[in-house]
Image 1 (cartoon, rainbow, N blue to C red):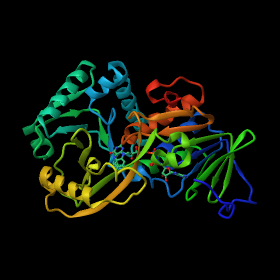
Image 2: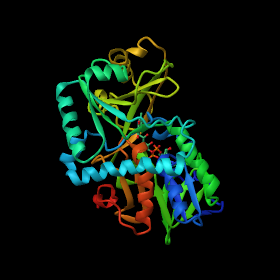
Image 3: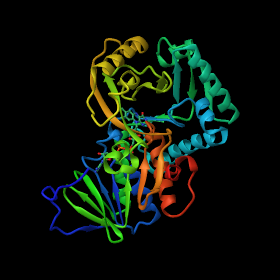
Image 4: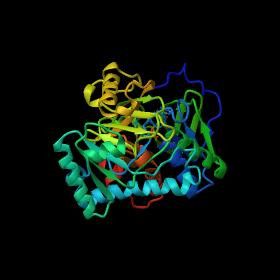
Length: 394
Ligand SMILES: Cc1cc2nc3c(=O)[nH]c(=O)nc-3n(C[C@H](O)[C@H](O)[C@H](O)COP(=O)(O)OP(=O)(O)OC[C@H]3O[C@@H](n4cnc5c(N)ncnc54)[C@H](O)[C@@H]3O)c2cc1C
């Protein structure tokens, strides 16, 4: 992205000076503002967002707070080895503990938070065999899981045509935008040095002497340190992210309320598709980006007929309790997928004044808060886990 002289409305006005500028008003950006302020409340921080807070993936997701990554645990072990896979799992368990300790605090009902575990369901015997393999590895590591046969799935989840599944006992779910608002409230109450700038689109980050000039459509910010929490949009802002973070569209539909019938949120089809009933009764169904792989890469947040029809069909085939019920909302959002499926945290190997936190690869609720805390560790010279460090892209 670039800014023409004619478009540069900040020319002639005073620069806003800050110790740190955070770009992006989603879970990652606000979590970073929170942890940076906790570390040192005297730092003057600006959080700069191009639309309104939560307009990105944070306000468009399905609300699952799950551990691990986008693949079944046995695959995570094959890719990373048992020790690092366990570390990856523990990292997201800690994320949920941190949400509870620092943000939820008595607001669980308002935030529609439920800690009832989540399920991974298999439509084929092959996938069920993988899930059982995952469960046995997890048992050995003392990660609490339960194996379910088809009859238990029908009874406990009201879900049809699955051959089996597993339950991850530690997972949870939430209203994602209310969670974001809760973080913002917390910051406002505790840290007066954080200032929020919505409707400020960053169009360039320039060097000036020892500082960076962050240029938005309204202001120029002068700062020694910039944190990009721009998720899937990051390649638009900086070349470093090309071929490392991929904007990937996810689509969802929501039905009208029905009496509660599900024990907890469910993933299906190798974590590609998912459905859950929120505490107020509506059912959310998402996924099927595998049907239009090419179209689901990019920045458009439209919905497409092919995927929405697949979601309708999934509802009809697998969730009988909402068959024939009205679909009240259809939407999409842009996720940031990293090239290796793990988040990216830390200074860019090419510029130690530019930091990044994000690329949660469809798992920001399970990762963003702990990742932002880890980013602050890296900024203050403390060691961070290898699997998450931006240094692995050096
Ligand atoms: C359909 C869908 C379903 C999902 N379901 C789940 C789920 O159930 N569980 C889960 O854990 N995760 C889920 N995710 C992923 C989750 O939403 C993300 O991982 C998380 O919200 C990422 O937070 P973030 O702050 O990194 O990114 P975002 O929320 O995308 O925030 C980035 C912000 O940066 C702003 N920005 C970008 N460029 C600029 C710029 N130049 N100037 C200023 N601001 C800029 C954007 O406007 C945006 O607000 C889902 C995502 C989608 C789209």
